[in-house]
Image (cartoon, rainbow, N blue to C red; front, top):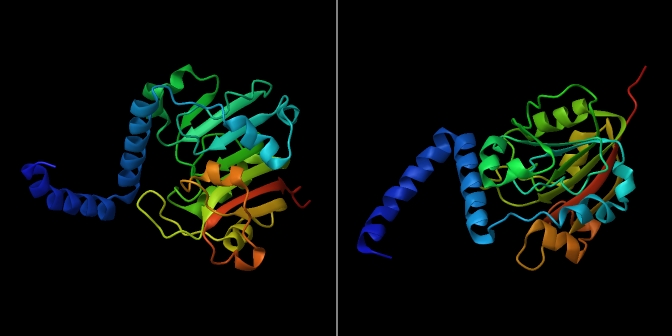
Length: 240
């Protein structure tokens, strides 16, 4: 580190703190885009081969489950999470940074990108057969509002697939400390849980590596243990 960098570091920290307090959503998006640009520079091409497993075998599903269906990934990122699902009728990724992701290679992906916050998804009611949120629900500005949108866009009888870190302290990019009980309460009564587990962090602590490891947290410790919730839900038929 140079002398100038040492002198500037306190000023950079002060500026970051002010930006985080004054405009937390913009600051979060700035950091997330910086993260993906760094991944792009490291990887060259942002890979997406791993997603098929997490949409299928991870939840006990076969690729045929997606045949002719409208699938939405909320907080999709720039990797092309639904490229594998060429049997689906429509593949939609929603992310407030989707327009910026086009320059990172997303424009070549065989799926749609909607540049929008998950709190206000520009698509009609009951438009989706399958909605997924992988490693994104703790990143949003308003979790309850996003869950309300999930309920709105998922058709009766449709499926919600959820993977999210739980019981972690809030950060600039992950501003919510979520728990399994809190999430189940917010998702009810429209979403009925069909399978659920919490797995322990493994390896480098990333969500996908940890889920693959599959070391489960005992349910007695779900309220406090840091880990990753993996759950599927069915959208109930509305009352008539």
